Structures are given as structure tokens and as C-alpha cells.
Length: 153
Image (cartoon, rainbow, N blue to C red; front, side):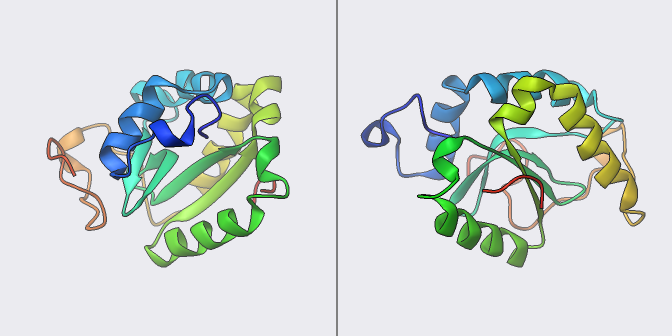
């Protein structure tokens, strides 16, 4: 996630850190974002590099309580325990966490988006809403406008 930004240059505050990560997105993040942005995926609203608690997640659909994380090779071994603990914390906050390898996105962001769409469609308790005003607020995230390793599981 921070391959392009040296750790010492990443601010400690999640909101500031998320802004820095958006400016320094990986190629895989850019590719997937081109498919997720502007409600292109079945009308679902995604945020990129969203701050959730003390974490910054790659992509998040608040309404569906779904987080999508992209993992590079560094996540295979060294970061696996950290990623697992992070996933448990995010799940404790009510989110489902999907993980994809960067290489999966590079081989076809549309295929990854189709898998995300399939998972969203399986959840019958949530439906996509086109109007921004009807999206329920998540108590774990700031209100709009206020600052605030393995493959798919």
C-alpha cells in the first residue's frame, strides 16, 4: 500500500495519511479505482484510501460495509500477521474484508470488479442506492465533509 511513499513521510493521522496515499496510488489501485469510481459498479459508492478508525483501507463501500484491500508481494509473508490482525479489527467494526493480489488486478481489473459485484449481490440485506442522501451513515466513519495476504477470503 505504501510502496511508493517512504514510511517516514507518511503522516500518523489517518486522514492526512489517506490523502498522501491517494496522491501516491499504486498502478493496481489506479486500475481498480477506474472501475469502482463514480458508482460504476452497479451503483455502489466506493471511497478510496478511506480512514476507518486508525486504519486507512484501499477501497470501502460504506453502505455495504465492504472493504477491498489490494496486496502486493510484501503481504505474502512479512505482513501477513499484521494484515490478519487488521482484518479482525475491521471485522469487529462490522466490515467484510476482501483481499486481492495486485497481480490479479493487473491481469484484469474488470474481473476483480465482477467478483466484488458478485459478493455485493449475495448480500440481500443491502441494496445499492443511487441518491447520496439515502446512504446510511456509519458510526465508525466521519460524516461527509468533516475531517476526521492472501487472495480473496
